[in-house]
Amino acid sequence: MLQQTQVATVLDYFPRFIRQFPDLASLAAAPLDEVLGLWSGLGYYSRARNLHQCALDVMDLHQGVFPRTAAELQTLAGIGRSTAGAIASLCFGERVAILDGNVKRVLTRILGFDLDLTLAANERLLWNEATNLLPVTDLNHSMPHYTQGMMDLGATICSARKPACERCPLARNCVAKRLGQAEKYPVKTRKLKRSSESIWLLWAQSENHSIWLSKRPTPGVWGGLYCFPLFENRAALQAAVSVRCAASLQDMPSFTHVLTHKDLRLNPVRVAVPASSMAAWEGEWMAAHEWPRLGLPTPVRNLLFQG
Image (cartoon, rainbow, N blue to C red):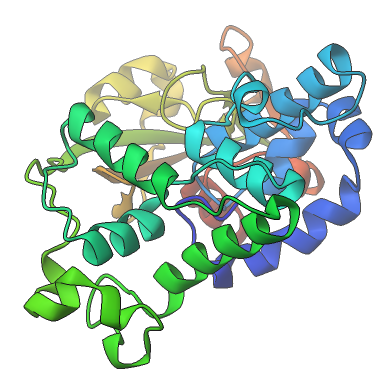
């Protein structure tokens, strides 16, 4: 949950999730829709799908026991090299490095590592440096403390902007501090370009106030979540509804929903339709009491519960 998401946001979700799924077996036994429903609003839904698949794999392939080495952990869904290193070092004392965003910042500043990390070869060099710095004795004790310390240092003191160098226990050994160039690190020259896209949402409501929702394909935006039918433009949306319903289309206020590297300009269009008119569409009518348990994209959830 903490990947790409702030602690303050996660604090609202984690207790509910753990109450519902207190162990691997309960998570693996749950339908994916239930998992996505509890994750709804947290974003980056591939994390929830991977977490569910990971639980299934541990139960099916590892007899319900989590692998103890970073190499084995990386075979599980959603666990890459750095996450595997964090689990293996924190939980099992394995001498293995992590290299999340915070740790990259700490290491590049301490070492004065000024190679461009957008190049894979340079990131491999930093992995080597990270491994060379690991403790070599009493690993069951030293590795969890070292890994947690590096993560916390990057999260609290060695921040991206205005690092608190005067409070840093490693300040005397830090090349970036000595050069007065802490904010130069890490070096990344290639910027990801933001894009934008306009989408029209058909907010169809039946006589009994149920809403038509269909599950989005995976992969793709909001993959696996329940959503209004989406269209590239209003003309396509209007052409998709029956002639007798087209006249009652009601344009709602447009708004922008921000994804990691894309801005979605969302244009909801509301229409009251006979329940039978959606028979040929993919999806189903969902009553208001069903909405809370569904995995819904944040903008769709906001529309339904605030509109």
